[in-house]
Image (cartoon, rainbow, N blue to C red):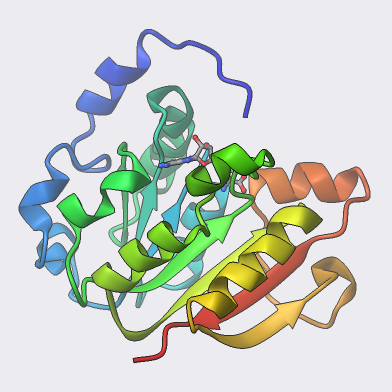
Length: 213
Ligand code: SAM
């Protein structure tokens, strides 16, 4: 993602603590207290400008959602969407996914979405891929038993790598599409990257995998 420096981003985020949670460690083990209703929690890691997570939250009021994004200059766009939509079941976290265990504990999360995660194609950067085994361990540690990871990308190399990583970790492959936009899947909510890359003619890959206890 091309990053434009936005010196005002941090201050704007601080003005909306009801949307971008400023003290996420305080909700560890009790995230239902951050939301209007106690219901299952789904998170998107690397939420970008937030189109996917906002539309998911609108479409599924019986699920709580958290969008997690590292860069303040990016998450402000997701914040603008949330200010506009004012959804009771969506929060944003401006934190690094490496630190998920600081903010969540076992059984906090039912599903993790990974959408168009950075591919980090160089072997020496493998550990940064959000489907590397250390990230899978992190997700497993904060999820319910049988929690699911739903993953979409247009990057064939990252998709193949991730399928191997999920399998080596002992996860169950529940669904796979090698060409999502030319399949009979209904109700797909597009992300910003998905829109951009599918318009270029790129094929979109998607899978759903589950932790086995
Ligand atoms: N999911 C969005 C989409 O599909 O349009 C954005 C995709 S973009 C390629 C990947 C996003 O993940 C970037 O905004 C990046 O800042 C974020 N990201 C990457 N590594 C992260 C990490 N360790 N913690 C939080 N966010 C991360």
